View 1 (cartoon, rainbow, N blue to C red):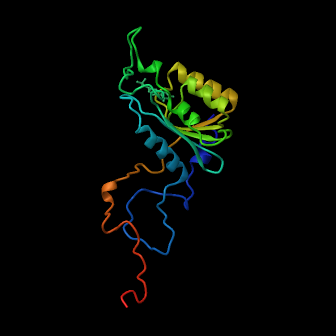
View 2: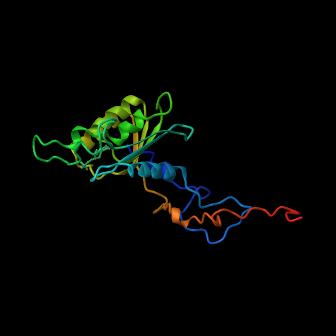
View 3: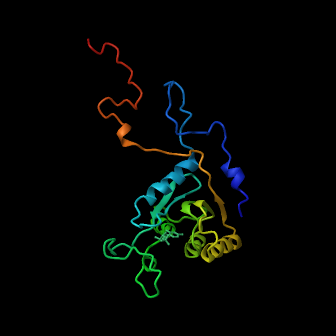
Length: 210
Ligand SMILES: O=c1ccn([C@H]2C[C@H](O)[C@@H](COP(=O)(O)O)O2)c(=O)[nH]1
C-alpha cells in the first residue's frame, strides 16, 4: 500500500534542505538548508540504531504523532536486566544453539513500549528496516497508522510478506523513504568551542567599552 509515497516524499522548494556547508549566510534571513521533518525523524531512527549492540543488524525506530512530536524512540537490544555482556549476540544457525533471536527486543517494540504519551494511536513510525511479522502485530495493535521505512532488504522473507499482508488488511499505510539529504553529518570536531564560529556574531553593544 505505497499509495501515499509520492505525495509524502515530494519536496516543496521552500522545505528543500541539503546538508551542504553554507558558504555565505545572511543573518537577517531564514536558513534554507535546514533539515526537513522527514529526514529529521528518519535520522533520529538511525541515530537510535547506533545504540544497538547487535554486531550484524542495528535497527532504530522513531514514533511521531500528528503534531510532529516524538512520542517514542527505540532500538534493538536485550531486555532490561538481561546483560548485553552475558546474553548471546550470535545468529545461532545451528539447531538448539543459544541465539540472540530468543532474547533481543526489536526496535519497533521498544519504541512503542518507550512511549512518552498515553498511547501511539494514529501515529507514524519511522524505522530503519521494514518490520518483521511480530513487530507488525504490535504496530497494528498499538494503533499506529503509518510506517515509513528505509531498508526492505528482507522483502523476500516470509516474515516480511506476512507483515505486509497484515498491514494491508489492517489499512496501515507503509512506504519506503528516500532521504532528501544523501548524508547528514554531525561532527563535534567542527565546533570551535573557544571562538563559537558556528554561531552568528553577537551584536556589539553600544558604548560597550565606555
Ligand atoms: O523488524 C525487526 C527485525 C529485526 N530486528 C533486530 C533483531 C536483531 O537484533 C537484528 C536482526 O539480526 P540478524 O543477525 O540480521 O538476523 O535486528 C529489529 O529490531 N526489528
